[in-house]
Image (tube, rainbow, N blue to C red):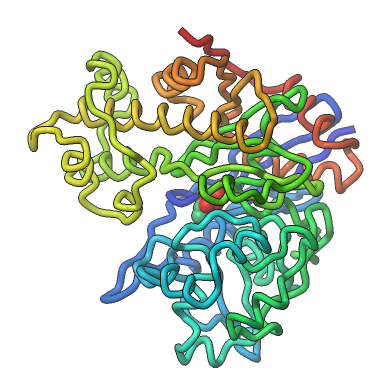
Length: 450
Ligand code: LRH
């Protein structure tokens, strides 16, 4: 028997509400609503338009019609603060905002990076919630805050009135203990944060509450956690690249890797669905290309990639791990400088430079992940929007010397839906069983390494 579920999936550039009819050997996905996610910059601060997003969610749920349940996922690390009456205190700040500039270095004086990694297993990214809170701690807003809710939990709160912290997303804050899977009291104490800010942890599959007679269910509310559920892998020996604005490149492991070498390589141990560990690195992903395209007046991506594929391979490459590429604005200029390209380098040359550099970064991360974990892989799955990028898929296969299996594009929404369908008793089993439904129903394109 199959049933319909709604997946709310918010990405850095757009949000969508997808309806999935899911059964033991069926998934039919339709898009109920898609809306832009456009951050807003004021004098000082880059914000998410959280009310605009919530409006999109409400409209999408209306268009979705009657469903069995609703699940919400979004990008990680960002949060809203509620006051004592449950009202939102100010707009959530975008993780690409400059407020955390210099904060990781300052905090390292107080708590050694080694200790942070030992407790949380998390890669050091300047925008991790821990650094955002360190930057926000002395503001009047923080002083008035009674509760911290990560973005999907905030939206779920507005739908249901219930608060909580979904585990996979909480694991990205750098405030959760990777072993106990709960907020780290010693860390929160050492940072001088109020423990009462952090709501109880809830796990994917649990019921959050009710929205107009429909259950809202916790899923892997970190989009990458849902995307990894949505990887159509058969065994355990696979690497995945969840490729969109970011490329999240890594492995699914039963236990964290907390070695000094792993910390030095900045690999993260994020919490996955069913107690798995998402052992991965953040690679800059398609963000530099998205930013260039914005500057270039949104040219046709298919044409652009076709032109790029005719450019000289590896004519110019940059280190996409360089934080210089993190903030928005003048991306082409930054690429030209880093690659030593002429100021009038064509769009095709710049696109080729990004795609070549990304394929190399994929290779480096996949090799390191295997070395550091001791887990060998024999295929690479690319899911998310990047799975449509034939040039990138082929170059990644070539660089890694491994077959690339591309698709599904909507892995995140699918992972979200599968967890809901299991919670509703429509399908059963572990992640391998959930993924077999994907293999039976989704189109996957294979690229052999050349
Ligand atoms: C991808 C993502 C990624 C995080 C970043 C903030 O959307 O969730 O996993 O590191 O956004």
